[in-house]
Amino acid sequence: MHDRRLRIGLVSVSDRASSGVYKDEGLPALESWLGTALATPFEVRTRLIPDEQRVIEETLVALVDEAACDLVLTTGGTGPAARDVTPEATVAVADKLMPGFGEQMRQISLRFVPTAILSRQVGVIRHRRPLQCPPVGALILNLPGQPKAIREILEGLKGANGETIAHGIFAAVPYCIDLIGGPYIETHEAVVKAFRPKAVQRPKPPAAP
Image 1 (cartoon, helix red, strand yellow):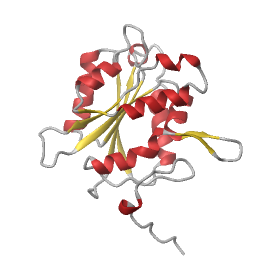
Image 2 (cartoon, one colour):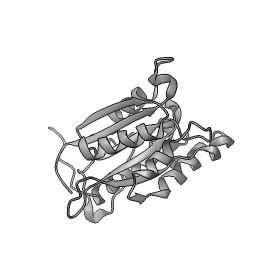
Image 3 (cartoon, helix red, strand yellow):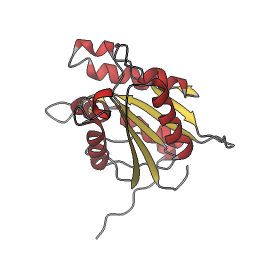
């Protein structure tokens, strides 16, 4: 695990938003949620691009290999329509598939709409080029396009008494980043509690007097 500043790439994939037909909502929603959830300082690289597989692939590669992002979150382009090619582009640049992320995203969304089974979000790891030994990876996750759905999937669902109904996918992200050579990420537990095995948890700094 490396003590360096966390870098996050945010990519909104939309023909109409990228051409100025309407205002993009995905990037502001992602930045806002990360700002409330992360206790670790981080830098963001944002991209607003059309639904073109080649462009998506080039953007993901650049964010990982050139911008040295540890985490890349995409929003949009994951449905069954002909122009929805974000998952194809993501898999094309991947070294490892992480199917559990997509499975949990659909499980959360299915609590609200039956059409969640049409979502094709995927999670993958790409090792940064040029390859190092051991390799340093980035986690790339496809998220839905609606701000409400983005928050629910990242944060999870809680009942009226605060009990966890469904774990959000971000609970697993910090430990995944640990395992692929990224910086140690801490979260605000009131928003989302990161899970790590006790053996690799760092002691929390003492509270200010």
